Length: 218
Image (tube, rainbow, N blue to C red; front, side, top):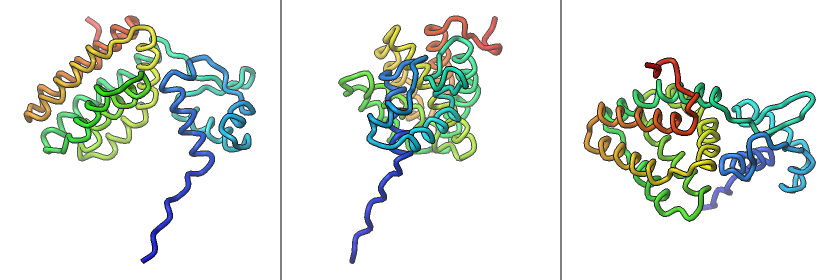
């Protein structure tokens, strides 16, 4: 019986994941120029896969392409944060409620929390927290809802990276994550959804006071 060789990622995918990782872990900061020749040299590829990767990242909202300024990492401000977090506030609590009611496995969420607690640097913790949130909605029973949240996932991570660089709040958020997971594991769908809504809203309000959405105004 012959073994099936593991597919080798395309050069474009390799560069795409590499640039994304650097952006979401703060190695590339908002407003920083992304020069094709420099990135090609860093990744050991030609400019073509770099160019294709940057086009894809522009489509997901992580970078901005400008005819005169070239390509830069997307800037994060209160308006951008409000747009992204409005989507999360509208969808994530409801999707988590559905996941809990379906009895979906939360093992991945538990494992992500463990990785976040054991993380030795900001990058590891950020990626683990990102996976925690995704694990709450990925098995909701409606793949379209999951894909909609996946579409803003990278932008939400960029907002978080900028906020954490200015004001690290890992311990508070880790405590909130554990409470959300506890309620979900107890089968309290409504309680878990409320806790998640509060968690998302309080984070963006602390980090970007001007980002209060229309539905949150008093």
